[in-house]
Length: 455
Image (cartoon, rainbow, N blue to C red; front, side, top):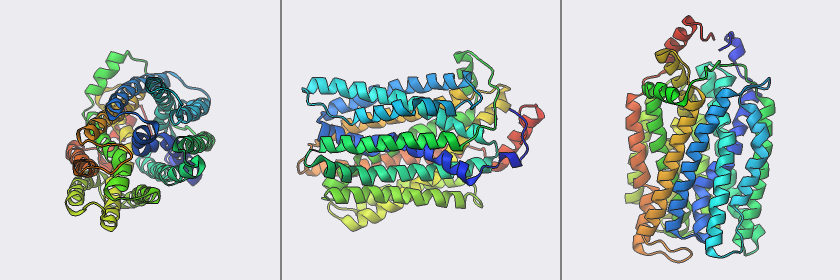
């Protein structure tokens, strides 16, 4: 890493905002995949739930391979504009086009539509890897100061939730308005707007950030990199945390529309309000997390909030009955607030585990490490996507009609207890994680002593 004094590690507010808007652009896809795509495919596009389960698994396997490949590409590439930002510049337009294709419903027979769904979803997954891996790696190039990373990730996650808020409140409304009775056309138009917004935000991110920390990455065979990562116990813990947490997030997010529409008996306005309540709580959570971690151990915050999520989830399932609108909104807000208090900590911790591994093994594995975390995220999405499809089938969900008591109970479980269990596992895993701020200071001192870094 190049030698930089501490003041040069500070990021301006504009740069933090620019960095944050990159995740806002990325969340055009992430939020859509977590909150809209399941409902879109079953109730609008017309896929059967059992086919949906296999689609999600296959696509995420492809995405995992793409993430690993992109991690290798970023390790082997650098330019005068940096290692990561050029990819955002080159691939942002193909990324936007792929989002538009996913939400396009052709007037074909079922088998042809299934092929189109696979093709477009895989294309979007590849494009998302192309911009996503460079973006999540970018923080390691902006600064090596842990507090600056934490602060920048606070901005990042705040803007990510703003992006999610726009997707959840704007897309259903615009789809209904622009579709004029045809939701397939409405969703296509609304997501086209989101795609254009995503392209613009990526460009803003590129031109307002600067890669000032240049890591010299030794070229190593994939198997050697894999073996090095397997020796990085703290990175492995984050992999487990990412996997379990993603399953919880995606299962809950995928069924939120069904819960608001069928379990609470709401209309389009209710659905938008319910989804937006969760996102608004998450936005406030980003602000609160940044403030709390200034005086409270970030690792303890991570542990106990996720255990708290499990308890709130059980309370929601027991206390809320079908149609109990007010209590559902209150507890869903609380759940969404608590669950995201850990998020800035997690995304800043990845770079810290890479430095930890560098000290432990004497060799740096960066792109593969970030790519590996993204693979765990994709694996969690695959597990969750398969679970959602299979559970909807098991609970006998039927699109666009009143649901049976079994289906309603299943929808409630999928919003509360089932994801809550995975968040409990996530919190318990963090009791094995030990890279606090004080510990990371020791890691940086060891890196400087070895001639690898100074801050």
